[in-house]
Length: 366
Ligand SMILES: Nc1ncnc2c1ncn2[C@@H]1O[C@H](COP(=O)(O)OP(=O)(O)OP(=O)(O)O)[C@@H](O)[C@H]1O
Image (cartoon, rainbow, N blue to C red; front, side):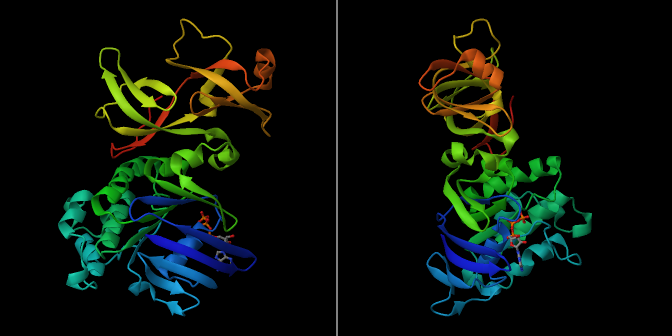
């Protein structure tokens, strides 16, 4: 568990954060470029000191301005994975992996070499040098190298940012396995909503060096007042669901969630599995009557809670279907439907994005 309560002035910019993470799982530091995410984890790693405050991992103080504690980076037991991997170019993958491991006394090593190369799928790369690896392979080795130092905390600073979409999709499942395989708390820095949805359990939302909100992914990313962080295109809600059944003849999977049942194209994961889905505002339509003979599979009775004109001259309709759901419509549609708060309508969900479950991977179904 990480506890951090620090202040730091960086020129005109001030960082002032106070949060703690769980003993396992992924805490995402999410925010726009320049919000202060990297500075926060650099302070945890000991790469530069806060002006004041406290940083502790599992009760062990890494920094405490009152007690004048400021452990050097190598004593902090934090595994750090940078955006660009930073492997030693002159060493083979195997030597890169074991480099940090050898600096840790045998009695303190709790991460097994065999487990790391198995989980990260890098056995076939052991004799290669970094120049002969793809970007995704380099990052998997960098993760392995950090894990093999038996850290008490893993810090990942946009580890997928330098990869193209295909490579990201390749590495993401490996990162998703880490919390379950190694039970190490992970702090994951990103400004990618997609990565947060796939990996994080908890989100700490940073803006201008301060925490705007923190909480679990579904609650936080479904909050109406925080939609602008997702970006105009991606505003919507995030829902936790459980796979209820598959109908292979009809090619459908049904998911259970707080608003009832959601049908998606066949998604082959075991019944009972948890999936996180995202429904974007632009994929939800509103109708005054229940439509008949329509291709949309998911139609929910809904109550209009709030109607908000957006800066982009569109209208966000905040609906309640047993849980929040947002629809983004045009002012013309608002006028046509004469929407008012309290009104009973139907919400038509045109598509959903499946972002995460216990499937070890990223999947999207429209
Ligand atoms: N040494 C420094 N001196 C002065 N300002 C700094 C210093 N380091 C960082 N900053 C400023 O602090 C702010 C936060 O930077 P930081 O790199 O932590 O943000 P970030 O959220 O990680 O951004 P990105 O996603 O672009 O990496 C930025 O405005 C940056 O210009």
